[in-house]
Image 1 (spheres, rainbow, N blue to C red):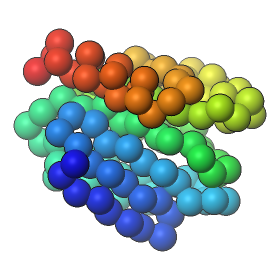
Image 2: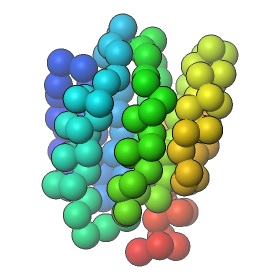
Image 3: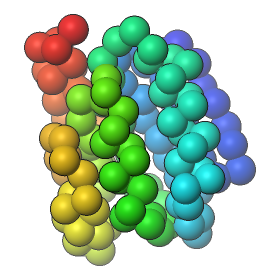
Length: 124
C-alpha cells in the first residue's frame, strides 16, 4: 500500500494500480466529493492505469450522473463494487448504466483486487 487517506466522507487506501474507497455511513456523494476523488486519482495515478474499488460496507447514496464524469478519466480502466447487501447490488446495477467502462460487482475485496490486477496488467 502506498498511502491511506481519510476524509469526512470516506477513507481511501491507495495501491499501485487500484484504490479502495470506503464511504462513511449516510453520506450523499455529490459532484463536490467526486471532484476530490478525481484529484486524488490524478495525483497518485497520473502515469498508470488503475481500477476504482468501492467497498460498500456502509449505506450511502450516489448521484448516478457522477459516473459520466468519472468515466472520462482516461487511465481509469474499471470500477468494482464490493458488497453482499442485496439493496446495494440493485443500486450498483442502476449505477452501471451510467458508466461506459468495465463495471463489476464482487462479493469480496480479494476478488475485486484480482480483477483490478488482470485488467490493469493488460493495459500497462
